[in-house]
Every structure is written in structure tokens, then in C-alpha cells.
Length: 313
Image 1 (cartoon, one colour):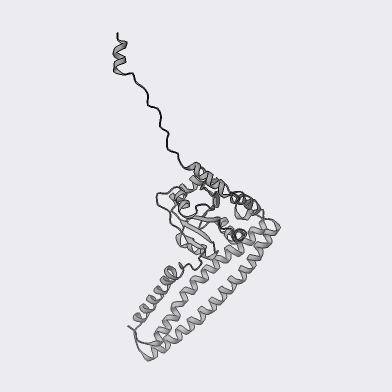
Image 2 (image 1 turned 60 degrees about the horizontal axis):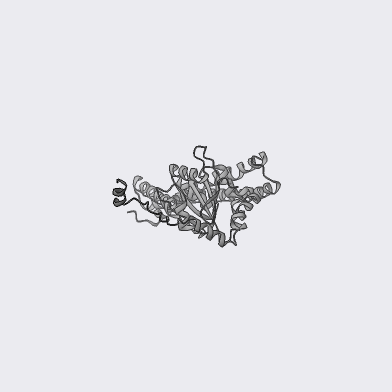
């Protein structure tokens, strides 16, 4: 154990630098996706956005550009300052204690590894948004029936199938998901379920980054396909992402090709149709689902042995 305040101050300064580098790399990737690619998409008009949608996207892009640029430059400058302080404290430590190279190097490397593990597995997974819930699905479940009955009974459920590396999926999150939530924020009879596959670490990071409020489940590729095909009634087609489904208040899948959030008014009309179901209609549908006990059928009559004996004469 190295007992020197200068050494540990140097180790802490140097240990923070890799964390900053990870953040800078992530911000750079985000800038390419959320600024550069978004501008290209709007200019090329790939998704036939309206003029109002383009204006909203560009406002968000410029705001995001300022934020990411500030984070990249500020963290880069902080890293340079920490690097200088780290070497300065190491120099003070070497003046007072004439030690070898390997012992301090191993200690610094161990501290850096600890910082990175804490960041990736303890700090990043923390969810502070109460409106984001993570649910689990049974490994043998190939439909949402049990999940709906346990968590969403009596509500309209808007289901979003997406992937962690799906560009159009993330674009919906960035620009159009929040306006959908704002539209129905006063209603308590609608819920949102996001079903994802891909990289689990990216999954949790993207949910936090885009503040995707609602319920989330992460499944493997096989179960994702089973849920997708059961919900969309498509047994052999190509799996498309994103894909949206609407489940009504009785738990029935009523829209296998629901509109996406960027369709706005078209999607609102679909959701309003099923949100307008009143309690009587829902109760009647639920009653129809309950199987009535089979009625007793009359037992067939058989001739008695006496009559059989009588007819023989």
C-alpha cells in the first residue's frame, strides 16, 4: 500500500481521464447520429416530413448541437487539466519517495479499472425517472396476454417494436415520442410498451438518453420474433423496425400496423378510436371472453332388456 497523498491525488486525476474519454467518444458518436445524420435526413426528405415537422427537427438538432459541442470541448479541456495535475503530483511524489515504476503503475491501473467498472455497471444503470419502468417477460411467453393482464388491464396499450441500432427507431424517440406523451398526458387509460432486442447496455443507455417514458422489456432475438409475429399476425414476412401495434382495453390486438408517432394526427385518430370505448363496452367484451359452462345434453335412451325380450316374440 502506497502511503502518500501526492500519489493518490495523482492517481485520482489520471483515473478520471479515461472516464472523460469514454464520454467524449459517446458524445462524438451522438453528434454524428443526432446532428449530422439528422440534417442529411431532413435535407434529403427521406421520410416526407411536413414543413412543421422539419422546423421542429431542426430546432432540436441545433439545440443538441450546442449541447454536444459544449460537452466535447469542456470535457476535453478538463482532461488536459487533469493530465497536467496528475503529472505534477506524480513529480512531487517521486521527489519525496524514490520508488520503482511498476508498483505505482499497477496501483494507478487498478484505480482506473475500478472507476470504469463503477461507471459502467453502477452509475450508468441507475434510473432516476419514475415514469420509466422495466418489466420482465416469461421466457416461454410468445404473446403479451399475461403481461397485459398483470400490468395494463383496462387500458389501451401502444406497443413499439424497436432495436438498439435501428436508426429510424431512434429518430422517432428523438423527435416524435415526447409529443405523443404530451398529447395524452392527462389520460390514465393509455400505456406505452417498448419491446427491444440488440445490445442490452445500449438499450438502457438509449432509454435514458432519449427519456423514453413508459414500460420496457428487453428480449432475445428468438423471443422478439415470436412476439412480433404473434402481435402483427405476420408469420413469414420480414421483421420491420420500428413496428407498432395497438391493444384495446379488453386486451385484444386491434391494430397490427398502427401508425408511428411521426404520423401524429393519423396515430391520434387510431388511439382516440379505442380510448373512446366506454366501461359498458369493455365489460361486455370481457364477458364474451368468459367461457360459459357447457349445457347438459340429454342422455340417449336405450331400449330396456324387457322390450328387447318382448320384440323377440
